Length: 199
Image 1 (tube, one colour):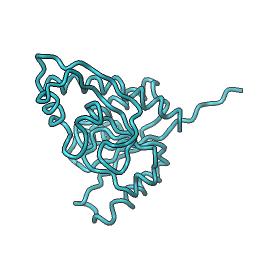
Image 2 (tube, helix red, strand yellow):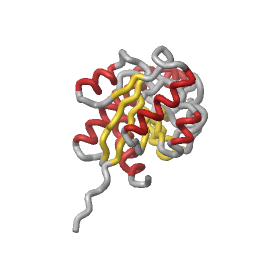
Image 3 (spheres, one colour):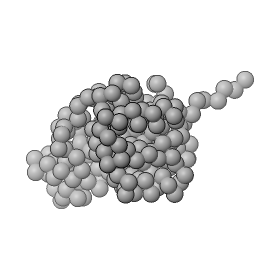
Image 4 (tube, one colour):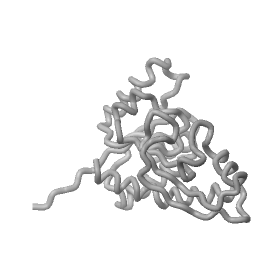
């Protein structure tokens, strides 16, 4: 008798363009990831990730301190995640620090992708174009992406995957950013798929 593999419930956290969110969604649609995106959480009501979720009938919740008091945010977030029976949280350009309470509840089940080879160019203040500008300024010969489990500090969680690319002599922060983002789109869905098989 054939058994049907469980479809995992994923929540995506995103604050901006949502390109990794869209890429993960497409990989789910084509069968590459055995999951369903049950919920998008964002702090930014005007971001493209929200637009995409709305257009594709993906449930979303906007959680920020304009809508909720600081002491309500954890319970609102955990309530939403519980309602959709979330198995894994995937950060995709989420610009807020995850609280200790949420991290402890989803211990080991929150993934983030960082556009550099941690521990280099990680920590508070290293995000977006600032990372690539620092890589160029430091005359690094390689950079890449790191997928890690989220813990209580910025970019310090257990590293589960890294992939390198060369920094070209002709690279600007902008061109490097684009090539690193393309690498993110290639590797993040595969890492998520493999990680889901371990939980």
